[in-house]
Amino acid sequence: MKILLTGATGFVGQELGLHLVRQGHELHVLTRSPSKYQGLLPFPARLFAWDADRGAPPAEAFEGVEAVVHLAGESIAGGRWNPARKQSILDSRVRGTRNLVRGIREHGAGVRALVSASAELRAYGGTLARKKELVALNKTDAMTPGDIEAKRAKLAKASRKTVHILSGVSGAGVQPLLHELMKLVDRQRDDSKDAA
View 1 (tube, rainbow, N blue to C red):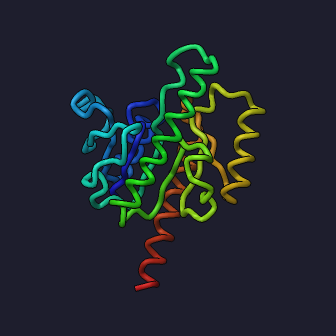
View 2 (view 1 turned 120 degrees about the horizontal axis):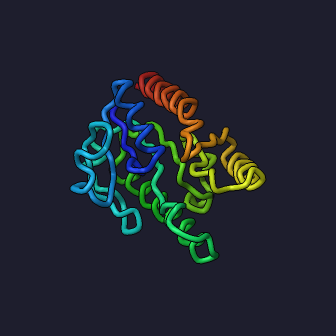
C-alpha cells in the first residue's frame, strides 16, 4: 500500500516509517525541506515539499495513496511552555490538519483512511464523528496523565471512536495504531468492492 506520512522527521515518524517500509509499504513524505532530508530518513521514501501553514499539499503527493498518517506539528521541545508557545504549538496543529484535510478533499480520491495524531478538535469543523479515520493523541510525553485523559475523553466523545495514545519518546502505541490502520483500509477496500 502507498501511504502519505507527515511528521516523518520526528521520533515517532521515523519509527513508523521504518516499520511501514519493513511491512512492504511505499511511503510518500511531506516535509518543508525535501532536499534537506533526501537520503537522511532511515527508510526509502518519495519526498514532497509542503509548508503545513501555507496551504494544501501538492496533488502529486496523493498519487496512488490509500492512507494518510498525520504526525506533523511544531516541535514540543523547542522552548519554554509559556502561553504564547502553547498557542503556537496548538495553532500549528490546527492549521496543518485543516490544510491536509483540504488536500485530501481536493486530490485524495483514493485515500481510504486518515490517521491524525496531530489534530485538535477545532481543525475538523465539528465533523469528526462522520470521518472514516483513526484518531490519536501524539506527543503526550509533555502532558500530565490527567491532561491526557481529559483530551482523550473529549476526542472520544466528539469522534465516537477509540482514541489511540502515542508517545513521542518511547514510540509506545504505534504498533496497535498501525494494526487498526490496516484493518480500516481493508474494510474500505471491501466496501468499495461491494459497492462496485
